[in-house]
Image 1: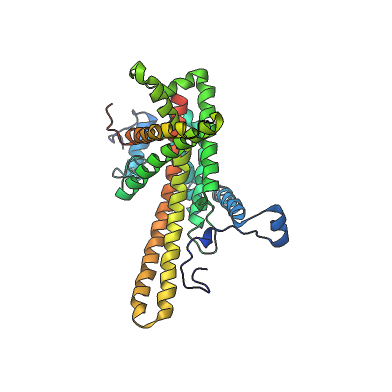
Image 2: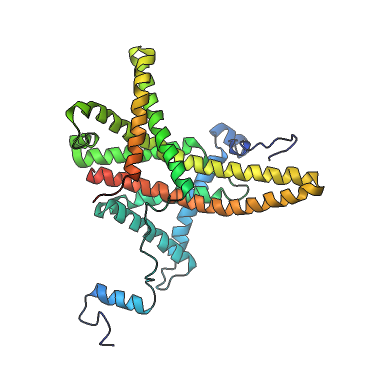
Length: 252
Length: 103
């Protein structure tokens, strides 16, 4: 991958999309990202389906995982949004596990992290944004626009404050998507860079073997860190979605 | 059995809680759910958050300014006008996130 044929570290080529499945994928424009999205969805379904199929009173490991997944997201919805949060449970659950599996799969070799593409995360955050706005308008009608009029502001400043509020509202799309994208991409670039060090210093041999070993251990630590970031960012995405939904339902 | 806290007189919730406590199912040390404000409380998390919030507002503001300029043919004026407003929106975003909670 990196440092192949030339001496530089090519940390960004790992994010390149390429058609898969030969001629078929070429025609239909199926890339690794699409395949991985399907795999992430399939894994989520599999976890819930296989996990819940025993329906045991005393759950086994998989059933425990499935029940915990359900309970975590349910608590998240109810605590953040309130009682109405139950309505949004399916959406938040799907979102959380789609991102979680996307992030986690990226840690394994040969897998592709589709959440490291701004196109994917921007698509997700745009969808969240549109849903939140739609819910707010459906719940409050035109009263929704009072969201952009902060209380206790002098009339002179009001036009400016409304513009600022609108920009701040729109900036959610960017901040939500960039946070996930930047975290995932940065982690994978770091991994690739240190892996490149290992290869370059390792092939140099001699005294360079020590820094090579150090880089390798850094990579081991980074993998653990990546696991943390992967689950944390999925959680952050879900919780921010819930906070935005709370704002939409309760308007302040 | 009769003298236990949340005995037969207690509500179902109380008895369940007492039973779960006896079995050690409710660990009193781990709080239920964790604080959403605490998840990104590491210095790097805060730094990243600050940067993203500031830049995101600015990006949106510049996009709006540029779009309106393109629409009205007033090339640099509205973009220039929206840049400080975007910066203000970014700071406003941050204030929302990090403002001390007063009730």
